[in-house]
Each structure stands twice: as structure tokens, then as C-alpha cells.
View (tube, rainbow, N blue to C red):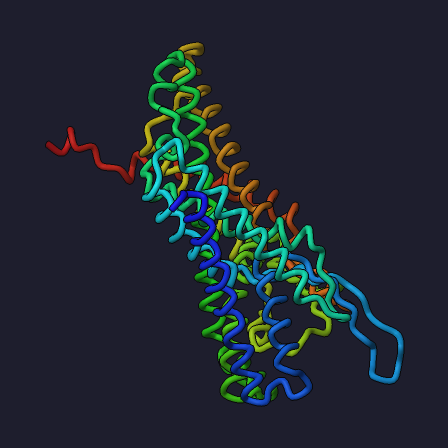
Length: 416
């Protein structure tokens, strides 16, 4: 079949399968009498709205204050459960590999265009079909936003199958680099190593924050179970509630990273939690919120060393890369080694910290959002303060890690 048609069919499968994975639990709750006031049609519409939400499409809410009052509360639901966003991402990743396998280098764009076009149409139709009096959806957002998450998976999958970005887009990067001057190649190698080290620092900090989150869950398991018992959701409802909370785990990990960095995060208007300050107002009855840190938090500032440890790993990684051409350049122009080493290392820490801070802004933005109603309009990290503190903490760790790395490394020549 034509490559564009194969791409379209592949992505229609992704859209349908991800939709069924979202819709299935809701239908199960309906059959279990969990939606006693809803018809099957309204449950299907709710599933379509959830499908759009996990792709990042904002839902405009209009909720009546009560049954006897014409007054309504309006707002926009934008809090995306990133764990559930991984469903279309990985389905698209599989499709990207299949499309890349079926195409030549100069034809891949046809499959990508067909896939993204089909996903846009599916999102547009879904947005039109699931609108209700309570939930309104921008058709432009329904068409343009879902292909972002799916398209990211598509590109990553195609790159995985192609084996290199050059083969994926038809550009011989090695030949292009070979035409550059030696100074340009050195500068490019330095910048690329800094970007990789900064990315490693952010991912390490995120992973360590996720570990802190897991330990916190284990320590507050009794409180979480108590909220489940008070809600009495039943077996099916409990399973769906748990699945929804698992979908929020990446968001919670990003919020934990903001907490350990000192920047903190918000759980609605008036609720701020960080290692330096904790102010909590009324919160929705969600089991996962039973794990919020309580009691004496006077020593919580020690968690701010978590990003420093991530920066230490990044500095060690950079030394292993052996691409510190800024230090080489300074050494050629200044004889004082104490100055060149100090200047290049401090700049290196600042650069690695800046990369981690920029990635932190992206992570904070993706994990933040609003539940749309009342006080629940501000959920997520304090993005700019978190990024600045993470920059400083990672920079300190990177400087220490780079300077300490020679002690941790073994010279195979000397060992022989």
C-alpha cells in the first residue's frame, strides 16, 4: 500500500487502542453501577473526554453549584496525567518503527505525514462527538494537540528503527561535521557533552525524586489505605481510582523534585509544600494525598542535597567524556593553571546547571495544570524558583563531581 496510507492506518490503530484502554475501565464502572446517574452514551462521551485529556487537550467545564440553582462554576481542566499519556506514546513508538521499516530514507516523511494527518482527524471527530453542556472542547485543540504526544512517540520509534538521525532525515551528519573547521568541531563536541551531562543531571535528579516519592508512599501506606476505606469505591471503582492515580505518578515525581529542590509545589490556591515551607489548605479526598509530609519537617532541607548528588554524577560523566575543550582553550591562552582550571570548571558547572534548569522548566510545565473549579486551579511546581534552585544545586554538584572524578577513575595504563 502507499506509505502515507500505511502511516494513517498505523496511527488509527494507535488512536483506537489507546481509546479502548481509557474507555474500558469507565465502562466496567458503569456496569458495576458506579455511574448510576449516567447513561451508557454519557459514559462513552466521558471516555472520549478522558482520551483527549491524557493527550493534553484542555476541557472547559461548566458545573452547576447545586441542582436547585441556575448558578454554574466555570473553569478549564488542564491537569494531564502524564502516566496515561505514555499509552499513546508507546503505541505510536511501535508504529514509528513499523513505518521506518517500510520506507526508504527519502520516503519516511510520507508515512509520518499520513500518520499525523489521521491522528488529527481522529482527534477532531472525537472533540466534536464528546462535547456536552458541562464540557466544551476547542475543536482546534482537539485536532492539533493529540498529535504532539503521539508524534513524539512516532519520531522516537522511527529513530530507534533507523539507527541514526541522519538516516532518518536523509542527511549525512558525519560528512557535514567533516566539512567544519577543527575549532567548530571542538566547540560542538563541548556543547554536546554539556547538554548530555545536563540531561543526565536532570534525569538523575528526577529518578532520585521518584525514589523519595516511593519511600514516602511506603511510609504513609496506612494513611492512604484509610482514605480508600472512607471512600468505599468498591472493587471496580477502587481499581479505576488506583489506575488514575498511577497515571499521575510522573506528575507526582516532578512535584517531588520541586519539593526536594526547595522550589516547592502547589496543591490548589493557598497550599504550598517545599522543604523550606509547608502550608496546606483543604484538599480533595484522594488516597494519594494521604502521603503528604506531615509532622516535624525542620530537617527537610537536607533533601536539597539530592539534586547536588545528581550534579555530582553529571560532573563525573563529563570527565569520562573527555571533551573539556573550553579548559584546553583557556590553557593555551593563560599560563596560570589554577586560573584556567577554576574558570573552566566553574563555567562547566554553570552550563550543566543551566541545561538541568531548562529541562526542569519543561518538566514543571508538563506536570502542572488546573482541575478547573474553585480553589483547585493551581497544581504543580513553582516552575521558575524550582529551575533556579535546581540550576544552583546541580552546578555545585557538577563542580565537585568533575574535580573528584580523577580520584574515582582508574588509569588502565598505570594499572598495566
